[in-house]
Length: 521
Image (cartoon, rainbow, N blue to C red):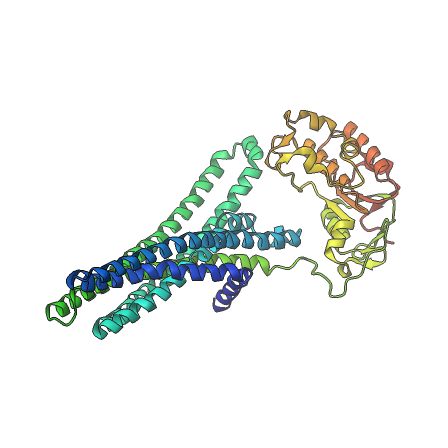
């Protein structure tokens, strides 16, 4: 747990250190925002003693001008602090989102094997805001600390007894809130875990909604989702109880200090040890001290929540793509590439259409050819992953289509234009079946399996990769459509290495080479 805490703290600090100027501005403006409020009771006390009690008009006017100056300083500092704090919030939320999503994109296929479906969604929907929250409170927390030190020094100079009460009582009130933070963090983590699970379940239900309707399973999965949502609610209520206790403690404990300071001040004023103005000053300062304690509590709560969020982000950032980037990467030779799978002994000629009947081993073979084979005489484990992804493309039926304009989704801005890819995939009728604006809904759920499959094939063809590996690309279409697709893909990909894993004789009929799992070199 300690290692995880330190890792989360390092992540937060590294992100914060990217904007040192903004951090400095928030700190200074926070101090200038809180100081006038802390000093105002002292100024009013002097105005009472020197301007009202003693009847010196000039002194009263001078202290009034000081009050005006403090008000103007407060106004300017409040505006600056608001801008700096909100900008820090944006930096924390957007910066952490960019870091995590950038790393997630680099993980490629490793992500789905090692991370639950709802984890990335929860990071983007919840955790980034918690990181932004702790950044937003920094300026106010720093200002509270500075203003408390100034106020405590002032009351200590006026009355050592009152100063000692303030210097001891307020820190004790703050420390008294501390024991609530550990259980709050545990409950926050429990709620975060339940939220991640329900997000994953929701994603699974949405992606399989059509199937659920077909088999009459909607009510059953609805009940499961309701149960998971109730667990999130229970975890949230448990965390809310601790938050409520924190809110009560941040009023009660400083309030006790205020009552004690007021009582002592009244006794000193009755005994003639302090003046009326000093009593007003003491009361104002003691009442003001509720603000630093409340801000300290808010900062502690924000930090505890941000650590939970940063810990989750750190777990994602510690994942490495598979295979890991080589220490000394080697380049692949230009042009079409020959592939050799050491595990099965299959050799795929360069620049030809090869159909492989791999049976139940097709998916495993496709993964090896795309990431663990020898390409052009170079082991892919020795090649930079970005170059492998650019030169060798593996298209699965499990790939996803995102919502938005269909042509934009398919067009990868290569030498293969969208029209040529749609023609080869026999998908022009799919485009015609879309709404007038040509928009796909999320995961193209409104399309049939065969329609989605043809759009996925068109997108894969638009990649214009040196090596294109297709895993059962026409399993959901009829024989006539499959025959057209096989012939057109062969024409479009002529001269480039294309591997089709299929048992269909229609693909074998147009292939340059037909291989079977178990064939040797």
